[in-house]
Image 1 (cartoon, rainbow, N blue to C red):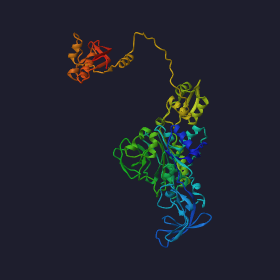
Image 2: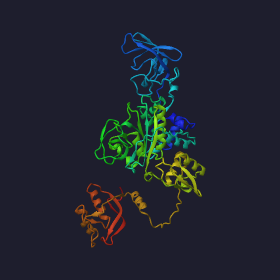
Image 3: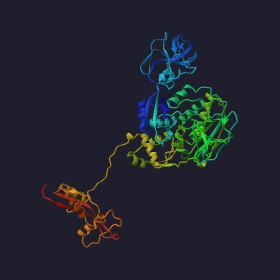
Image 4: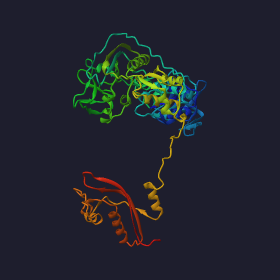
Amino acid sequence: MKFSEQWLRGWVSPQVSRDELAARLSMAGLEVDSVTSAAGVFSGVVVGEVLSTEQHPDADKLRVCQVSNGAETFQVVCGAPNVRPGLKIPFAMIGAALPGDFKIKKAKLRGVESNGMLCSQAELQVGEGNDGLMELPADAPVGQDVRVYLELDDASIEVDLTPNRGDCLSVAGLAREVGALYDAVVTRPQVAVVPAVHDEVRPVDVIASAACPRYLGRVIRNVDLSRPTPLWMVERLRRSDVRSIDAVVDITNYVMLELGQPLHAFDLAEINGGIRVRMAEEGEKLVLLDGQEVSLRADTLVIADHQRALAIAGVMGGEHSGVSATTRDIFLESAFFDQIAVAGKARSYGLHTDASHRYERGVDWQLAREAMERATGLLLEITGGEAGPVIENVSDQHLPSVEPIILRAERIEQMLGMKMDAAEIERLLTALGLTVAPHASEQWRVEVPSHRFDITLEVDLIEELARLHGYNRLPVRYPQARLAPQPRAEAQSDLPALRRLLVARGYQEAITYSFIDQKWFELFTPGVEPLLLANPISADMSAMRSSLWPGLVKSLQHNLNRQQDRVRLFESGLRFVGQLEGLKQEPMLAGVICGSRLP
């Protein structure tokens, strides 16, 4: 998840530096992978306006432009294909410094004087566009510093979230975390209900209600896709690593990043009849938005009309039903899909999308309507149009439900090694959106909100308390135990002590097989019936040993055959006495000595 620091601080702004904020997020379990500047380092670049252009006398691809900075007019030679009168662009004046320590000086291009430079996105490192000038909105104030106008003193912060923290895949979720960490006020944008101005709806039939317990749809007519996405939204998307496409797609992506609810817009003219949420038919074909044709499986949830599949639910829409430049009316979708129904489907088709990434980790099942109203409001503001009524299909029995959890103060102290103040416990949990009420003496009844799929047990709540309090602030204590010495007879010694003693006396410990040759068994324990193996590894390993000596003597023989004239060996292990019925396993200690007494 990548987001703009300024966007986050618009929701909640603790009085801490960028580095401290990133460090605190990492300590709270939201590991910050990177912090990158929103733009390259540059200065002396202002909003300029192209007043006029004329052909360069000696170059077909160059234009001689008259550019205003609000106070003066400068002649600038430019080769960008999109330069034209009335265009507002970033204007690097003489003395400006661009990324890469590139200084702007007065120059002559093919004999014509040029006093400055008109810049592309790539030249300012505010995007990848390098095929023309960066076009600024018509209302951009001429002469204002571009860094100030575009609010480029910002950073993109990327957090690496664990799979259970899907609630933080949005600015709203991250703001909630930061507010809890710093006890700061979170200012959530007020989302107004958009009234319907027409009564057109498309019927929604949810056949696979277990996989899609909630589905909302709305018809919005007469949208104007020729209107550009506002620069502030384009910049927030760019700093979140999302490419701007068109106003409708940008708005759905923006709301997903802001609130965490994936949305999708269909071209209303391409929907035959109504919407049917069903499982795909085996082998059903669908051309996706990326141009790839897939053969659907019967376990895949799809959004369809009454003739064909329109999209893979929670993954990607179809090409033929997607919004295009000719779209006038749209059907806006906001739905909750079950995690199990969506999990792994994107990967099985070789896909990975922002929507599937969120649905697989869990989306707030009560968020769909708020996201619908938020997207509708932005659409009407940016593209115009007329909103119809919201149609909603809900299967209450298939919606998630979480039982309240009883939290005990003694359990908190036992697990964290410290006693937490009751007011602090209530504050931290309430800041995360949990409802906390007294239950009994030093106990609380905690109701988990719909955005926290990962909290189901008391230990989950205690983990949240530890995380927000700060792992680095938890007390460090060494384990303590009352160890009373046990009485032991002086004439007895335990096996480890005996082994250490023998090693100190020059013995070497041997480990031999518990299986020995039957002949050796009879030699060392004559008159005793051996316990034979039913399926021995080899003939010389056919009997269970009744003494440790056969193995030790065999090891002694092995060493003597290799010119070792002084051998001292011992072994501790089990011997086996009797047959299967009543078999005894007795621990023994044995040794062998051969050779001179001194080395």
